[in-house]
Amino acid sequence: MTYCLAINVHQGLVFCSDSRTNAGIDNVSTYSKMHTFAWPGERFFVLLSAGNLATTQAVVKKLHSDIPKGLVPNLESVKTMQEAVDYVGIVSTWVQKQQTDRDTSNTNFEASFIFGGQIAGAPPELFMIYPQGNYIHESRAHPFLQIGEIKYGKPILDRVVKQELDLDRAARLALVSMNSTVRSNVTVGPPVELLIYERDSLGTGRRLYLPEDDPFARELSDKWNAGLMQALESLPRFAWETGAKEEEGRVFPFPSQT
Amino acid sequence: MTYCLAINVHQGLVFCSDSRTNAGIDNVSTYSKMHTFAWPGERFFVLLSAGNLATTQAVVKKLHSDIPKGLVPNLESVKTMQEAVDYVGIVSTWVQKQQTDRDTSNTNFEASFIFGGQIAGAPPELFMIYPQGNYIHESRAHPFLQIGEIKYGKPILDRVVKQELDLDRAARLALVSMNSTVRSNVTVGPPVELLIYERDSLGTGRRLYLPEDDPFARELSDKWNAGLMQALESLPRFAWETGAKEEEGRVFPFPSQT
Image (cartoon, rainbow over all chains, first blue to last red; front, side):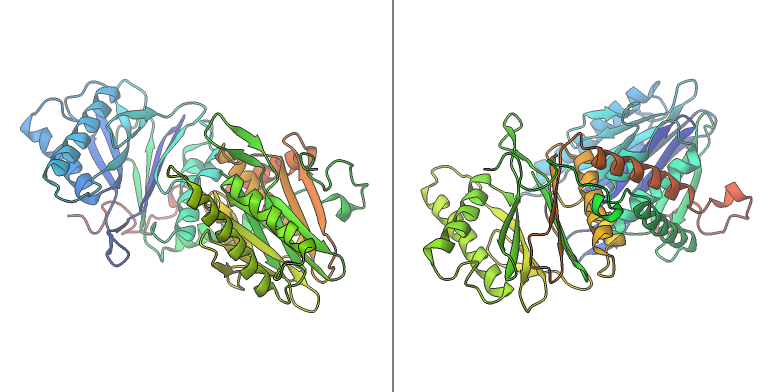
């Protein structure tokens, strides 16, 4: 499996991806799932990928090769983020259709993507593209998107992500969400890649590559564990611990039972 | 869906369950998933249930009705926790088999359980019973068990649960794991039930019933959120934030790419 996430805060975008791929438990490998397309000063796109590796590689290859060929649309020619994500969705379903048509067994060629970035003059945006090529947009109420093994890393995002978070804090949060997933699920694994894109910079962002033994990643995980222990200490005590009178109605039996 | 968990620490056992059941999204209801069997001074068992509601209700009914009938084995007659969990596994598969034999469509009658407790003279134990009736035991390295929607609430347990945690802290942790799941998944919902069993007490434990608007549950959730924000503040800063020299090799491009 895979875990990728992206966050859209007022200051910019954060992208984070793991690098473990597996076709069966005895065919485990390492591939980057973070792909960038940059025209400094004009436009910058990031594509995070999950699903069938042949599909995602073919999609990335075609997105790149359409540009010098001048095929329209391509990532250089599109006028808006909406046109860009439409185009990526079409390429994804086209690749899957090709492979499905040739398939003689019942292979799953599906892939999903997070696509985000900025075109000069417009705000940064994030999309999550389903295997069917349709997509959803992040929103003020839900300023993050995830693909792959999304459940382990979701509670911390649900609790803490807000558009008001500054960019570096959002990036640390993305690493925590990733680290929680890596710890709890062996199909998601390092190296972890992190890309931090500052709004209106129209550059290629800051990109970190964090292998398993990276000291910064280890310190982050250790400090987070210590912070959780402190958070646990901060929780309210039960009535019997403080000697307070226990309230009626919060004790056995369950009201709907007879 | 459902989320239930149990933790075995040196001081005793913690059980926690949600109460939401649904047969389709328009058939949502509230049932307790925590069932107790008590012979004070002699033995105490807790059963947490997930899966087909008709199956779990039939299992609980049979576990109760086998006792006065004197059918052997039953929860009063079994000599060990191992015999007890074997018996529950047999009852579960027997109920599922009965329903499957009568089924004319392709209904899923499966159920899984967490079963735990203590028999006088032996230590407290926890088991997770699969729909197939076989089961696994908690262990020193993995002193908690989960059924249902387990992924959201797993990272906090993976990071913090140890057998050395005191019982009330373990109970608070169970509530945090449950609260994270309730927030992130609408198929898991309050009221939440919590049962805290002190080792060798052989009583019925302390049992809390926490409806949606419970002030203690809300305070716990608020304090946990605040604690997470503090934990986020405690994380190491990126090199560019502190002005430290950025290390080579942690920056783009991904090494395995050309």
